[in-house]
Image 1 (cartoon, helix red, strand yellow):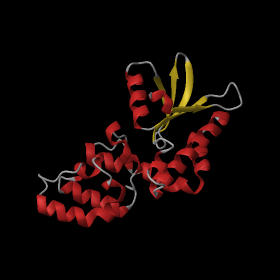
Image 2 (tube, one colour):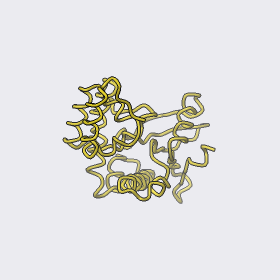
Image 3 (cartoon, helix red, strand yellow):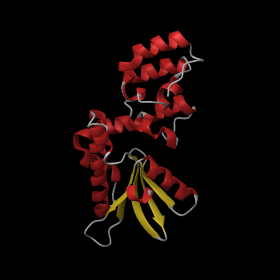
Length: 209
């Protein structure tokens, strides 16, 4: 069941808020359905950058990390470097949440401390989500539809990636490139092949799957 992938842990302090990690797409979809059904209430977003919120159910409050991959995902990806990096970022974010539960100040400071050397690029990547949502949806919210949540981890903060996204948006094929398959993970490496296929098929016939 989806519950098997919703992981939680709590400090030794019995009064500390429980931390919950929504692990993977299936569990995220079930979690969002529970919110729509008003089984779970989103009280406040603590960090849009890191997708951390305070939720409540039955009068009990807990802190939640959303839109994170399952902890075994990097293993199923044969320890592909990007997958391993995302796993490390997720575990560090959870550590920051645990520290916040003890201090209850600025959660970003705790998460950044736990991320260490990963903090700067993680923040830059999160900030660049507004650029991606502006191109995809026409609004710079930085919030993706659930079916596009994988785009949270693309390197849209890099100028060369933004330039390619702008180019393909102008050619009306960006949506297809970003929302199917794994082309989004390395647009620079795939650009020559994309140019060839778009030229061969035309933008109206170009699709990915």
